Length: 408
Image 1 (tube, helix red, strand yellow):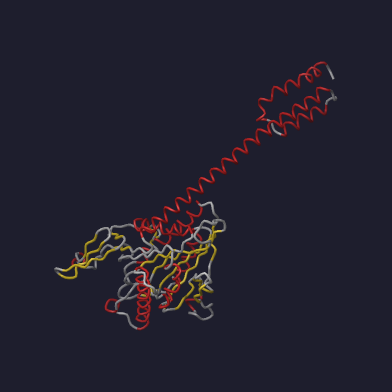
Image 2 (cartoon, rainbow, N blue to C red):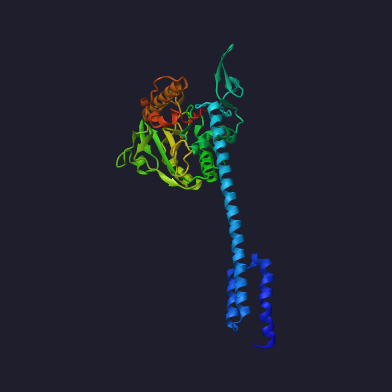
């Protein structure tokens, strides 16, 4: 070793000590490289000192890093507790809001008049935010009161803004039921389904469910089911043969009650879905299989009740109302008057079946609103299916619209 090398070796301990102030830039690789260089040189006392100093720098770095990590972990625990508290407060506020609004809410939507309707019919009613006044005679007017009235200029967004809080409560573990009710040809499908660039309640609601779940700290599993009630029979709309073959060679759907009073539909297909696009594809399949036909009142009249069910299961949210719950979004078949539809044969039988089930649903809603001791759920398949989403302490939503035609 020459004199210059010796001087360098003697100065290395001081150099290492001077680097301690920059220990945040040191890495295990740097220490290892220095140690390797030292081992290549003749072992001397300064070399040992340098190795010890290098190790001390690394240990000092580790200690400071551990302190910072522990501090960050404590802050995360504190923020997590605050977030949980805020979430609980938000959930409580939402449920209090819904309780004040009422567990059963009835909305009315008035559609714009089309060119075929006479001017006289356009002057038969007036409305405000919660009332519709119908002129039934020259000097006589009937008043109909609703929780909310949407005028003919209302948008899909206006309607959904009133429905959205009820849908959000499904994330909190409540069963929810939202449906459109009205005469055939009134455009219930428009309000519930909408158009590709003007989405209705169903697609907007499903998107909100996924968005709300992603914002939650809990982990959710969603399943999608779609069925129709046609002529008093349940038919799975996710099973292609259910329409072409009727009920032949297709598993029969039966309504069961579980030990907790919940309603289950045996053999109903439930597909696990992870995002809105997957639901959209399944919804498209089911819609194409739904029973429709032409009548004098509507060229594409729905001849059945179409029911979409989203089931939610949470694995790590003990504060929810229930670990597993569901939301029904339903496009009901329209009520019909023979004088308007001119239906005969099969169309007439379909109309009668729809009217009977709608009458049964009306009886159930009336019994719930007036708190009658007996609620006649058994009078139709429709009310049997919806039993645990209409009664009890669930957040039910009854969505009653006026009339609206597609394209307007």
